[in-house]
Structures are given as C-alpha cells and as structure tokens.
Length: 100
Image (cartoon, rainbow, N blue to C red):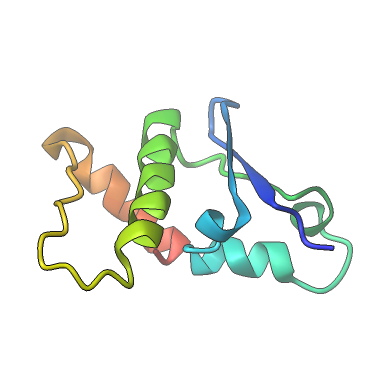
C-alpha cells in the first residue's frame, strides 16, 4: 500500500512532511520512492537531501503544491510563483537536480 505522505529532510536535518502526490511532482523523488528493491527511501518514505538547505527545500515544497494546484488550471490568471532574487540561483540548482 503506497504511503500518503513523504518526509523530505534538508541538509540541516529539518523535516518536511508532504503529500506523496506533491512530492512526486519531482521526477527524482518519484523515482527514489518507486524504485525496486529495499532502499531506505522506498521502505521508509523518507528522502534526505544533504546538499539542499532548509530554506531552499521549503521553497521547493511550496512549489510542489503550487504546481499541483495550477498544472491543469484553465484560468488565465495563474499567480506568479514568487522567488526572492537572493535565493534564485540556489533554487534553480535544486530544481534541476529534482527535475521539477
């Protein structure tokens, strides 16, 4: 039976509990959670990101829910996903790794 939530752990050890469906916005996380075999990520529903800081992982989690909410929207007034300029580069690197 698939898990309904996933724990994402930042470099500093902060834990984010997100819906499985939201976490699977990331192709990387989806592959980690659905891989064959006895991997920790698959067994525990927990993924550790030693290279992603807490503020960046928090913004990534926010984006997961933003994308779920608006991906099939037919409205023309989808709000911007706001990213602070000082975090843009680090967020871009994390997004690239997570394939979001």
